Amino acid sequence: MSNCEKFAPLLSAYSDRELSAGESLLVRQHLFECEACTAELKTLEGIRGLMLEMPSAPEPRVNFEQLIAATRPQTGSRARLVLGLACVAVVVSLIAPGVMRTAHIVPPQTTNQELEREIARDQMIEAEADPTSGAPLVHLAGYSR
View 1 (tube, helix red, strand yellow):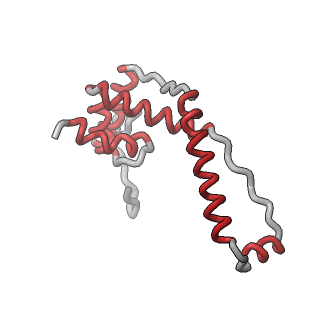
View 2 (view 1 turned 90 degrees about the vertical axis):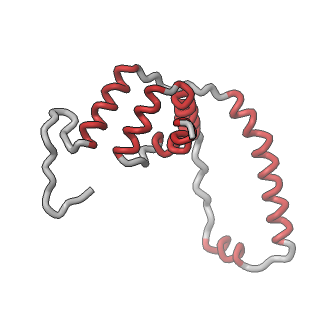
View 3 (view 1 turned 45 degrees about the vertical axis):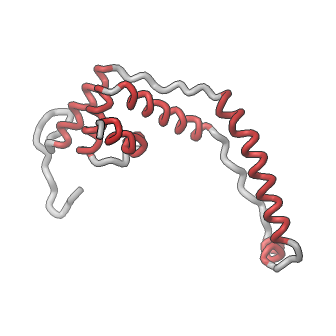
């Protein structure tokens, strides 16, 4: 198994900061050496940026009477629901490719110096040292990570 096959599944979790310090360090070191995985990570981060820019759906305004009426069985309601969902699926399938084509993914640029600093910081944390001063970390009694 090549290194890329080993690290590719971890890129999304790395981007979301869901990996442990040790796993992050390994992924960061691989990214420092691998242009393909670095490009993949930038693509993932660009997609996240586009998702964050999407407008949120407005809050539904439903009063109590509407809620009660919606919970009562209605004739043909299942067919209307299926038809409505099918219409939504068609509209989304028509709009989504156009949005994705017009969006320009511009990932943030990271320099080698920044990557080296981040790797050094992660190594200090992994060695249980303060990343700013290098002093050993003091663990409080009863506190665990």
